[in-house]
Image (cartoon, rainbow, N blue to C red):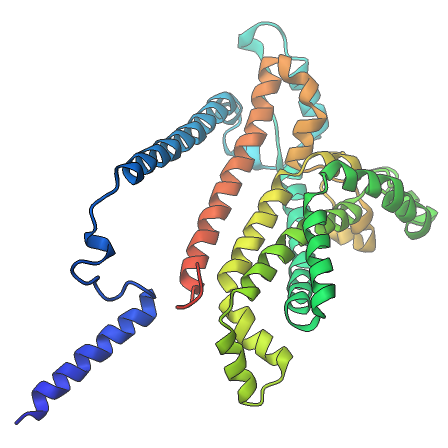
Length: 360
């Protein structure tokens, strides 16, 4: 007769344990007289109000920035509609026509077909992330688990230094080293002649832009992944090693699996920097509003392009012309929306991939 109440108590205890595993610390309510019941300190209340006010101020500034950019960009979107995102015509000529708009506001020119700029942005960003992600994971695993302690300390310092290097320095290295190398050794005269009627090949290209951007964003991903791997509970790794699993398999199946939210966060930050990179891409991508064609074969990698952020930098002197400035603001609005959508997707992925016992 006592079996049923005992079974119910065991089931309730198991349900509470499962809740603890799902939510981590805090699954059980605090005891009476614990920290939760302690009277609030006036200094803590003042600090809390101050921090809350600062958080609200930051959110208000972000909202004001978004409203300002979209208000400035709206005329360009309104005049073009969905055709703004389509292909058609030469973007550089369209920008020149907008810049030379008449003084009469009723005759301002807004026609723009921004597909080549959108395509170049996606092409360079996705290519750099595809190259940087495996390199960053392998480097982080080596630094965290396989490198000697002294070497690991040096590598961590070097990674952080590379992450802090200004983008213009990478741009200078790209235009002074990589661009001449590609022009002299990788692009033949026959290849240049094959597309001479469409675009000029001089070394500034999608290939160079992608390589330099990969070098720029990889240190960010390595640094974040290293910190996440160092936070993995050591008992998890030792338990797997005790079962006879080799170190590489432990890192691949246990450690990297546990830090998937951090890998997502690192990727989101890297993509955000890649989307907003302007100076370096303006220097090494060729700065031509051209959509490289994959049907061109190997020549595709040597064709120039110009992403949205680089277009804003290249045409910043035209901000005094109102319709031209509104067009540049429309480019900025697209970048803002892309970054916000990326951040939201990354937040959702981190929540879905988080494991109990590892910070989100």
